[in-house]
Structures are given as structure tokens and as C-alpha cells.
Length: 82
Length: 398
Image (cartoon, rainbow over all chains, first blue to last red; front, top):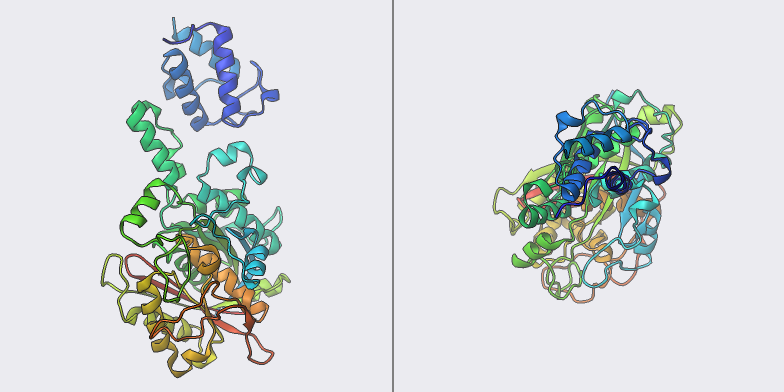
């Protein structure tokens, strides 16, 4: 049973996921840019796997190609669930 | 003018510790890093050297190569800025298998959870060129860069190729060596199934009781430079890669040609490539795997290549102290060879006690001993042979 796709739950999953991928937790915020956090296309594919496992929401490369900040990733997941 | 190839930096991660110094010092002291039937690098923690992200993006073999390369380039005096134009610096690193544990982990995910569970990092983790790519990226090396895959000869082939790249004028320096970390399910099972590994878990090359090799892991990386360029920038020269010889048995998938004919030819080619003859060889760092077949055929090859002096030259196997590092072996052993020459000491074949008929060279039993030959540079050959009949031999001086 996938977890409820609330903004709060998605934020927690994505923050935890990015820490797992090697980002420092202290650097995370909704406004932080993926570029500043050194998150590249390979990280985003891994993050998409974590999101799909947790929420059943599928993110493709095309979905995230224009995403600039962590907050935008969170909002995208929430909007895709609806 | 002929371009010559010198060694200006060495770095190693081995079962004797992290660094080239523990490798040579502990081997000379007769210590052995094998425990519980395997040569694991117990002291190696990638997070001591790499960020969490860097570590996640490299299989263990590539992590070890990066750490060995950092040691070697630091010793060579490569700072933030390379001493040469980056396109003139290459990176050639061998491996036998590549990122096997990463392949196994992703295969397990595929079977248990399906395609979507397979990591997007699986391919860059397991590819055999991953170590070369990681080292080149870390140091900004833009010249020739690739992995060499020739089983247990890969480390020596990598160094031989690297020296050729420099001699041909395509690079002024090449960061080169070998890396392996395949002490994992499939490799252990497969080597066991072919009865190549020791059921008793003891590595005793050239001893009558030897019953197979002991699998090990690690990395060895050297900085090779064109001699005149290294001298011009004032680099400390540790030794010289004088010659390289390579042949193939073309005989059997795994067994060496019993008389060692092609191995002997590779030895002779390496000595001739160095502009020397067999009488100039002061020390032999043997492939010496502790398998019944290799140690016999290698002994015959050495006798054929070195002639009547073969019995007078100390011959020892690093694998007695660290096990068989597969694709890293040739590079780690090249480092051990150069450092042994620098100390004018032949390290022992650790644990050698019982002679076998026909295996009658000086395998340096018991303890290390001085290499006697005046005051000048000493010359050694380092043998590496791999499944597939690959023979790669380096002629080194220091």
C-alpha cells in the first residue's frame, strides 16, 4: 500500500532520499537548487526510484528535465499523484 | 632520441594496509595479510578518502584505484595543477573482472523486484573501465584513458601499454596500474568450482604442498613519466620501466602451457626490450600463484629465459603475503618489485618450506635477503600471467 501523497510525506521522503544519495542534510531546503546540491541526472533517476517505491508515482526523465529546485521536485510528485 | 619511461609515484591498497610502504615493509618483514582464506583489505574504508557521493558512485575496485592513484600522484608532486598539459597525461588501469559485486547486487534486485529496481548506476559501477574513468575525472587527465582486461595479467598489461603510450610520444605521463575487488559470491564459487583456489586457504607459491591460489583484493597505481620531462621538472625518480614483453599461449582457456614456452618468450622479450640480456637480471618477482600448474610452468619458463644463471637469481612471490589480487596483481607487484630494488632486498616467499622435484630455484625461503650486485641500479623482471594464456612481463630497474 503506497504512502499517502501529502506534501509533508513527499518532502520527508525526498529529503531522506537525497541524504542517502550523499547530500548533506543541512544543505536541504525547498529553495535549494539541484545544481548547487550537485544533483545530476543519475541522482534524479535514483530519486525517482525511491519516490515510485514509496508513493507509486512514476517520474520519467522528461518530467524532471526542467526542474530547478528541491521544492519543484516535491511539488511535481504531489501533482503527479493527483 | 629514444623516449624512456620512469616511475615517479607509487600508491597501493593491499591486504597489508593502505599505502605502498606497509606493502613493502611488511612483506620484507615476512608478514602475511591473508586471513580466513582471503586477502581482504580490512583497513580500507572508502569514506576515509571519498565523499559519500563519490563512494556510492564507484564499485570497491574503483574506490581502491582512486585511493592508490591519490597516493601515487601526491608522491609524484602532481598538485592542483598537473605538471603537464592535461591532454598529455593518460590513465590506463587494468582489472580482471570489474565491478562484480555491483553486478551481483543489481542482478539480485532484478530477480527479486523486477527491472525497475535496477540502479541507473549499475553500468558505470560494474564497467571494467570504471577505475580508469574515476581516476581521470578526479585528476583531470585528458589523454589516452581506458581499462585493460586480461584476467590476472591486466595490471602488467596496463603498465606495459602505458609505457608504450609514453614511448610513442602520445603522452608525457600516464597514471597506470590495476584494481580488483571481487571477493564475492560468484567469483568465490566459480574459482572454487574450477579448483583454482586453495581449499586450505593457504598461499604458498612454489611449495610442494601448494593447492591453489588465495583470492585477494586491492589496487596498485604508478605514475609513469617520460624520463627527460620528469628530470626537467625536478621529479624524484623512483625507478625505470625498462622493458615490456607480451605473448599469448593460445593453448587452453585456463591452464598454462605446461613447459611455459610462451611465458619464457615474454620474459625474453621484456629483457630484450630493455636492451639487456639474461645476465643483467638481479631479481625476479614471480607470478607465483600457489597453483600446482602455474608454479611449475613458471619455473620452467624462468629456466628457459634466464639460462644457467636462473638458479642464482632470487625469485619470490608477493602472493605469499597478500594472495592473488587478480587484475591488480601485476601493478601491485610492480610496485613491490621497484620498492624491493630500492631497498636492495629480495623479500621472501612467505611460508615456503617444502621443495618439489624440478622446482629448484632460489625462492627466498624463510626471510628476505640482500640482492648483491655492486652499487649501481638493480634490474628485475615481474611476471604476470592470466587465464586465457595471457603473458605480460615487465623489466624494471631501481
